[in-house]
Length: 278
Ligand code: AMP
Ligand code: MN
Ligand code: MN
Ligand code: MN
Image (tube, rainbow, N blue to C red; front, top):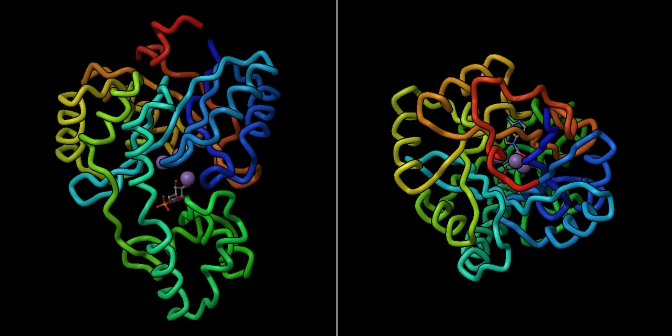
């Protein structure tokens, strides 16, 4: 099987390795086709492309766009995008623009919950001042010894009903899919198992997504359980969607799955790369 890892992060969003370091790690782990998909950012792609070329690894330009759908934050991965496309670049800039204010509100809430200086604390882990994310706050909370790992932080902080959660309105599904398609790319629903949707909600999302021109869902991802690999392989088949595979790697020792170390896609699905000239 082709070792494709089509979802990963660098210091350009909430990862801890630079794009070239992510490339080197992917290549060392046997990845043959690799996509860096930073949150709402494409500024790491030039470095990613150059590093992948030097390593003889195929590079697919990608992005992971934050959207709000039916009041829930959902992530849409775009692959094979032209990252210089003006509408995409503008749309991503707009999507990022509320993050600093949100982060200051998160810090205020955490201060009220007895965790001071969280804005400055999170900033220490930020590689791109345009992209302060909950992951950076999570690392600060771990540094303080309040929680042992990222999973623990998100069970007790930064999520709905917990200290440090600030609701945010991201892009719309329609915008994200149209920016990706307008930039020549394909749109994929990231880790569909992560949203806690009922079958009915998932059905509504996927129907709307397909109507807008979306073509795939992630099936094998570091953000799914093994049971969810099968569950979403069935979903991909039932909806006529292509299947993607990606670790969602953020940092050594922090992510569930390392680059390139996922099981293969089930044989019952059509991979997103089925018609790529590789
Ligand atoms: P943000 O874009 O600021 O809302 O941050 C979202 C990021 O937080 C995701 O991309 C993940 O990296 C991280 N995250 C959210 N929920 C969890 C979770 N339950 N476990 C681990 N990481 C999480
Ligand atoms: Mn992330
Ligand atoms: Mn995601
Ligand atoms: Mn991700």
